[in-house]
Amino acid sequence: MEQIISAGLAELGLMGRIPADAPTRLARYGQLLLEKNQVMNLTAIRDPEGVARLHMLDCAALLKFCDFEHKTLLDVGTGAGFPGMVLNLLTPSLKVTLLDSLNKRLDWLSAVSEELDGAQTVSTAHGRAEEWALKKSYRDSFDLVTARAVADLRILCELCLPFVKAGGQFLAMKSTGSGQELTAAAHAIKLLGGRVSAVEDYTIPGTEITHRVILIEKIAPTLKGYPRRWVKIQKEPL
View 1: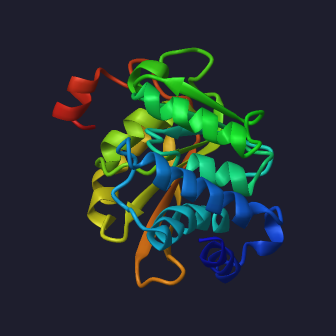
View 2: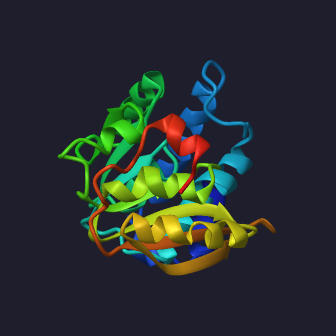
């Protein structure tokens, strides 16, 4: 796994920008993931090569499009820690908060970050995004927010943009077939204080899979009243 990750990071042009031991630590993270996955449903990918390419390298590609040094990042719906944990291992100065509704996943991620010496820069938050976004200490307060969820972009924007401070960015990891989805989200993005700054496609090293990251800049604070209740968000996307 370490060799695949190392070669992939080199192909992405990242080796000069990350700690020398990053491939080793990412490989260990992958091993811990596969071990825990035997007793907890963390990922549908169950082979080392798949984890290395489709999780570690897929998330690592974000470094090509955004500066994470000395920033704060909230990873919404982090699941098994993607992309937040990967970005922290590649950029130790990045302070990451992992938000998820399942506490046992967060307990495991806390143990993993401690083993990989990331405990000082990784914290967890248990709950739902639409609830945490109402907290003063979280709202309009993060340099960067990420989401790797399959939800419609209109929904993701309502859940994620309220956390981003003015001048910060929301990075939505999507498929290359998300053009129509992005067009439909134009109203939501503007209403929530955002503006699309870039749409970048990348191929995961060692595969023929191309993914997309949509970068949305926060240009104004999100209006009071957003995000709405989850039932309302689902039934009536902006």
